[in-house]
Each structure stands twice: as C-alpha cells, then as structure tokens.
Amino acid sequence: MKKDIDDYLNEGIYGIKETKASERKEFLGTLRERTILALTEGEVVQQKGLKQLEEAMKSYPDASLRFSGEVTMRFFKPYKTLASSRHIPYTSVTNQGADVDIALVLHVDHAIDKPDIFLHEEKEQEKATEITKKPEHSITSVLKNIFKR
Image (cartoon, rainbow, N blue to C red; front, side):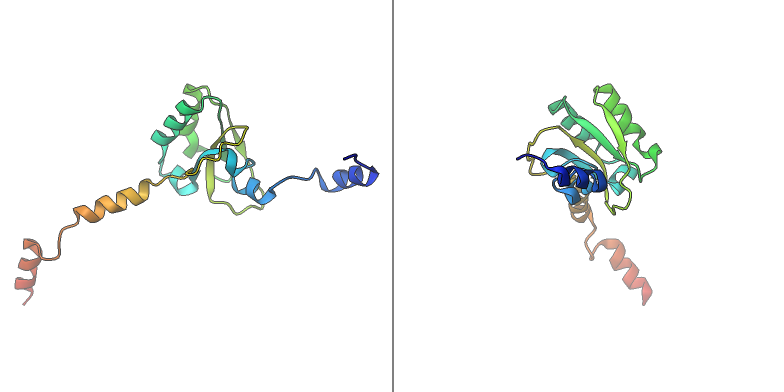
C-alpha cells in the first residue's frame, strides 16, 4: 500500500500510527506478547521478584528491562544491579497520563506469548500463613476464655 500526501500530513500532525497503543502504555512501551516478567509497583517497592527476575534473565539473555519513571528510582537499585551483572540493558520509561500499576517489565523484541508473566508469590505466602495459623481452640485461647469469666 502506497502512502499518499494525506498519510504523511496525518503522521506529521498526530504522530505515527501505533498498534495496540493501550497495551503498550500498560507494559511500559512494549507488548504483552513480548513480556517475560512484569512486576507491579508494590512488588518493586517491597523488592519482590528478584529471584524470578534472575531466572528469567538466565533463560532470556537477549532480554531488555524497562522501569516506570513514575516510581522513585531508588527502589530499582537491586534490579539494576542484577541487570548489570547479567549484561541486560535497561531503561526508564515515563508514561505521562497513563494510570498503570506495572513498574518493571523484562521483555524481548519478538513475540514469545508467555502465558504467566506476573508474580504469584503473595498467594503462596497467604496459603502458607493459613496453614500455620493456630486453631481457635488452642490452649491459650481456652485459658483466656476461662479467665475472662
């Protein structure tokens, strides 16, 4: 398909047409299908996912790392250190006007369609906590109930 004058004028006025613009905003400028691992702002602040990120970097040595410019850079220090040790390039992306919870994206420049790109560490910790909770009829709760009366 040949471009005409109107296409060039529209590109000059509005910018180049971009496929899946909302998806690119969500994943810090890349596409979901290219994403290996995505961490939320809360996970980055709590420094979660370092082990998973290192494993992903081992599996995909040609990957790149993107940080959200909306998050304070000091929270990214351990992630930058890890990326440098693995020779993974990284960059900061500022998504002006995008309300996105994702703060870190490890990605490649081709589609891999990885089905699971988010951490599930919190769910596993919640399950472990539920298992280790004391039952309601423990000795301490029985004694407390006796002495309340």
